[in-house]
Amino acid sequence: MASFGVSALDANAAGAAAAPASALTVGDQVAFGKPAASSTALTAVGIVGNITAVLVLAIPYFIFVKPVRKAKSVGAWKPYGFVMMLTNCMFWILFALPAFKHSLLVLGVNAAGVVIQGVYIAVYLWYAPAPSRRTTVKLLLGVLAICTVLAVLVIWFVMVKKVWSIRFMGVIASSFTTLMFVVGLVADMMELEEGRAGQIVFQLVVNMMNAAIWTSFGFLSAPANAFVVVPNVLGVACTAVDMAARLIYSKLTTSPAARAA
Image 1 (cartoon, rainbow, N blue to C red):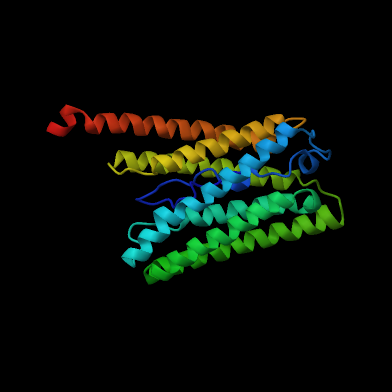
Image 2: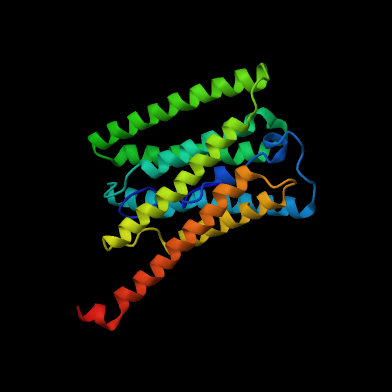
């Protein structure tokens, strides 16, 4: 799934982390029209992947909801990361929809992701100033419009008429997940350049685990599921670069020369 360090792209926790949605794909039954290889290993990896996806979704409660409620203000937080994660989960729900009987876990975890992101966005709207609320509502309306159009296309052309393959939705969902990883990395690099910490280390570790586990799931599928592998391989790479940059930044800022300056 792709999911986030489901963080907001803001001054406190930049970067939309690997979203549970990207990794949680319906597998080869939807993507390739045939069932994935049945194996204990594949099932075990999928279960572990669901657990890490839930962890990714839960992190913002501790780094966003609790501090914001305590301060009664969103501070420097922005809604973009939460809106992106919400969009990501909705895209993967649409991808899984045609094979819903075989993808209940996928639909379930991404539906949970939609609800959880909705809660985070509601908290943001409650404590944000009026201009930020208006901007967020406009973004949400745009996302709703896009997802409504895609839902109509999936239901009519894939499920009813059966003239399209669901792969078009897989391309959209995996591309958006990939974009989230890249945007998260760029945002975090900007945070470090400006002297701010960006995502917490635990958040990055969970993101790395989530992307790595779903990369394994994609490769264990028969044949390998490109919709899972591609975005999550990139997610592992982006998170590794992020962690390396953080380590270098930490050493530079804690060196005797830096302290003397």
